[in-house]
Length: 319
Image 1 (cartoon, one colour):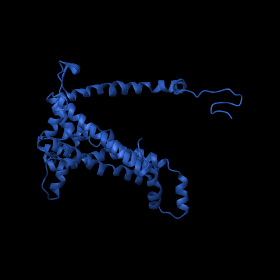
Image 2 (tube, rainbow, N blue to C red):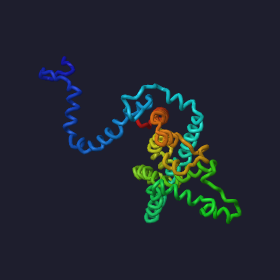
Image 3 (cartoon, one colour):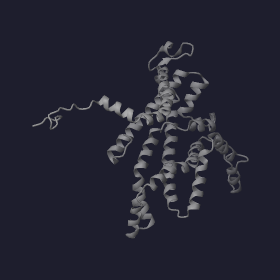
Image 4 (cartoon, rainbow, N blue to C red):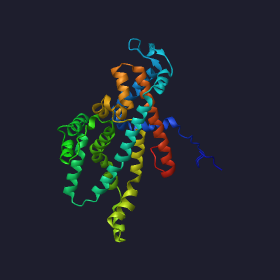
């Protein structure tokens, strides 16, 4: 009786080592690795190497002393942030703006892609697609300027319409209660068309024979959308939802900075703007690094948690 690695001739073949398989794979795919090497170098140099600077969150960093020469203070900056008067407000504003953006903004590209897929006129469909994509390419600075101009209490288009309807003009920019509405609605307008691209690509990958079979069985358009299109793009929806939840604490810092003011800090001030004021304006680098590190840790926890829940419930996950 032959052993596991013994051939009919009696010659014994040793199993190939893991290292030799890796070397063979590297030699075989050397040109592909060379092609992707600039991207890998970019991420290593500009994303992974700078991660060493996170240590200043645990030090009393002074540029004169450098990272290695600065005194170690442990969790001092984290404790100061958790005990500060602004912690509750910052966390609440960050979560509320992110949750509103997720709740209202996430379904819009899905609905738009489903409706756009139902259009039969190709010329009209392409025109609608192009118009919906355009706001994505507008700079955040320009979008903020448009919001300020359109909502100006005296000569803004919105307030002119309100006055013509017999209503009182509203100073949207200086009213704390309107900030989140302006932020979320402008974000949806700017990104829903661009966000629908991946859903349209997922719809294009659905087997056309499923629609043909459903049509032969007498299914109407809404039935095909509910029972074929939606289930077909569900894995894509789940993956993008996980990614969105993983970035829940990353509010659009730039747009908040351009739109908010001390009068709207109550509802507009988020962790990102607080880090900017303490780290850049006040030059308190260690404290700002600690706050930002806390923000990123929360994002990682949310990403891992939602990914694990999705894997158990739907068998669809990032890893």
